[in-house]
Structures are given as structure tokens and as C-alpha cells.
Amino acid sequence: MSFPDITPSLKSAMPDLRGRLLANEALAPLTWFRVGGPAQILFTPADEDDLAYFLSKLPASIPVYTVGVGSNLIVRDGGVEGVVIRLSPRGFGETKAEGDTVRAGAAALDKRVAETAAAANIGGLEFYFGIPGSIGGALRMNAGANGGETKDVLVEAGGVTRVGERVTFSNADMKFVYRNSGVDTSVIFTSALFRGKLAEPEAIRARMNEVQQHRETAQPIREKTGGSTFKNPPGHSAWKLIDAAGMRGFRVGGAQVSDMHCNFLINTGDATGHDIETLGETVRARVKDNSGVELQWEIKRIGIGR
Image (cartoon, rainbow, N blue to C red; front, side, top):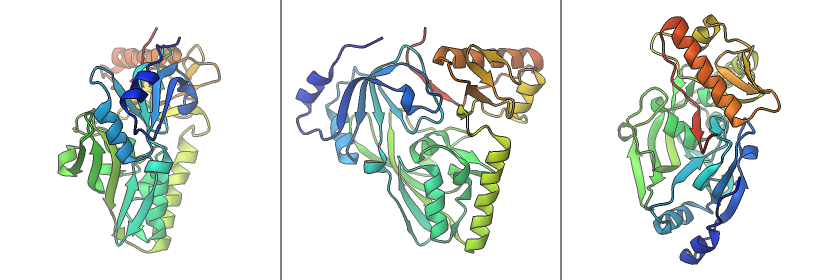
């Protein structure tokens, strides 16, 4: 499907805009699942000033969604009405270490933040080496792995509100909980400051190697997947509940529960967004029937379904 092209009216209202506005732009190539319909408008801001300008001029009636590298995202097949904002590494991807801190743009890969820290002999951020996302998503989701979470290392985060105001959040302001933060969902994170501890480079590299080995041996990282699908319920592991419900390898269309790790869904080649989301909901229903536990989605889902 395609949406009405509103780029001419937006451009006329924003004469000083420097970023790129594209109408009916495909989103599937921007996600790890490689599924879903187009964005009515895809906006790639040049930098934080450009983002703030755009949001200050954008009519309040137009919905806004933010995507990163698309590693934890299902785009539904009908596409996304409104504006999808994608922060690019060129404007938001810088990482810089100073003392025991690392400053990073929201488009910087989590893995790069770990590498920047390691190069400066800063320990404590190694867990980011095993998270296949970007810092913006890590801030929104309180991303974590291998015993570490964003809340453990964040000093402050910067962002822009829906009306274009710049804001700064302390760690406490973020109101972190398991796999989420309490910051208004309309805020677009643009940067973060992390603090680790100076450590021996050999110890840091050894820890990063452990993280990488765990990913390679326990997760289907070479498949079209979205990472961990469901949050671990209190006192449970999601994958164990899914396995106990007999869902390992279960398929809906071209979507399948991974044989390697039951909390990963994969696109076997020709899945649609509908296939993947239906598979996830089927898993949730079977787990609820089998154990009484209701799994909660960790993967973000946006757009218009069938």
C-alpha cells in the first residue's frame, strides 16, 4: 500500500530543514526481520539541531515513531502512517572516551560503545558487546545482557521532545525498570553519557570474548531475527516456558520459533510481519495455557496490521 505524499507541505513549512524526507519509503530493509510495509514519511535528521527544528515545525496531529538499527522491531505489513525518524550514524553515531566515561550518540551501536570503552581501558560496559542494537534503543529499553544493564552504567541521557525542546535526564530521571524506562515515549533520545571503571585491558578483552562466545553458541545470530522476543517473567526464563509449551521449532507461514533458542523468532525467508506477530501471539497463548504465565513482548511492533 502507499500513503498520501505530505512531503511538499512539510518542506514548505520547514524551509531550513537539512535532513532527508522520503515519502512511502520501504522499512523492511531497515529491520533485522526484513518484513513490513513502508513509512508514510521517513525522516533522517542531519543532527540534533535539525531534529529539534523538524519536531518544532511538525503538526501535532502527525504521529511520530523512532527506529534505530531495527534489531528489536516488527514493522506490520500495512506500513506506518505518519513520520518514522531514523537517526543516522553520521549525525548521531559518535563515541568518545574521557577518563572513566564514554559519551555516545543515540545511533552508535551498543557494540561500538563497548569497543570505545575497551580501547580506553574502561571496564563495566562489556555487556554492550553482546547487544545488537543502538544506544537510543538501549536507553528506551534499559537494554542488558550477560549480567549488565543500561541502568548500571548510565550517568545521563539527552533527548528532544515532541515539540522540539532539548531535555536532559539523570539516571534517576530515567525511571528504569526491567527492559523499559519511564521517560515519556514521545521523547527521542539523542545522546548518552556512561561511566565505567578503569581496569586492566586483558580483563576487559577477556570479558568481551566471553560475551561474544555466549552469543555465538546460544543465539541464532546469523538468522533474520529480532533478538529476544519476550521479557523474562519474574522468577522464570521465557525460553524455558516456551520450550515447555512445546513451541520449539513451531512455524506460522515463513516465521519459526528458533530451534537454537526458543525466545528468538526467525524469518526463514518469506515471512510477513503478520506471520511473525501471529507466531508470537500463538506462543503467548500456548505458554499461558501450559504454565499460566503471560509473556510480555520485548520486541517493539509498529504500523498497520492486516
